[in-house]
Length: 440
Image 1 (cartoon, rainbow, N blue to C red):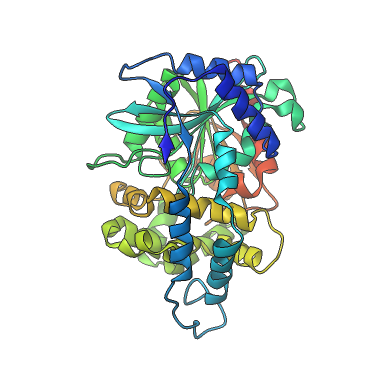
Image 2: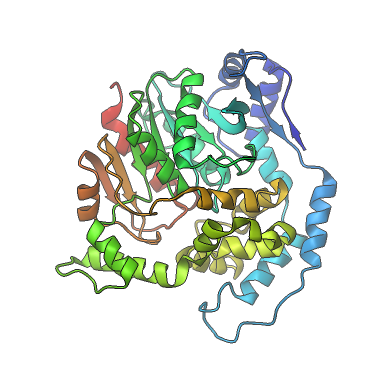
């Protein structure tokens, strides 16, 4: 299923680069640079901080079993309403299942992943999987990008090329990044914790260990969803190596607003138009959208069904937030959006094949803080706001939450999965947001 190559070779990475080019995926570093990077990061040998090359190939039997299970789904009757108030609609789920069973090809994303430099390293007794692409440009700024739930490293694949090779994607060499994209513990190809304690605070410390292990003395960090929690907590931990952070799901809800939302109190007086919209979005989310998080925070182990049924898993993932669900429903109805049917199923299939439905859910159980509460980050912060996020943070709230706000941009389009859905806008925001920190 997974291979950890015994020794990275020049031929292996030349082949990987060629494969990536053949499938149209842009990898910024030249093949020689990939080989050199692999040899350098793999040089730790058998020591505890070894970095081992990683390759993924699932057996045909696993894919056949997936199709069989999709075909054998026991379907409920159609919802009794014409809207989404009862949940993920039968027509959307059946359309997804038909495509998954007959037309979807997992080997495509497997090829894209294997065309990238992927590695495993052990931190605090747990295997951490990550993608690491070095730019061919000198003085590239290292960035660690963290996904969330129900996302994965699949979310960031579209931005690797533009970030690491800006001159091929409308930018200048001075905009270049070295990109590190880890899989959260219990997600994707990372190890599954067998004991408690892998909360966002622990993950944040592990990410700093990872970046230092890769040889980076200074770096920036980016995240949305759980990635935002991890990234903001990294900033709070006081690591001198961390120059600044960027978030596309900022935690900016003022204390009085959070209290009113919690107890069902009236909206505080004096709101601007943007603040009123954020209030309305948060009110809707806490009334109608937070159920999945409540269950995973309370009893993640109860979710055996999503580990047993691929269609059940897909429906659970689709129900994350209303705007994302509506976009996905349009996609499976034949409309063109920032995500394709393959994009959506690449991510869901990764959860299925790695059997991480329940292990990923435990992160909600581990975390004891608020999702959107201000944390008190004082290092430089860049913020991107996408209108269809769970809530679109007003600039006024962001400036109160981050006293060292160095960049704020409100996008015209996009939602929760910003890098995945709107990669060009996301890329430009990272370039602009971190520009003032280069050379620091």
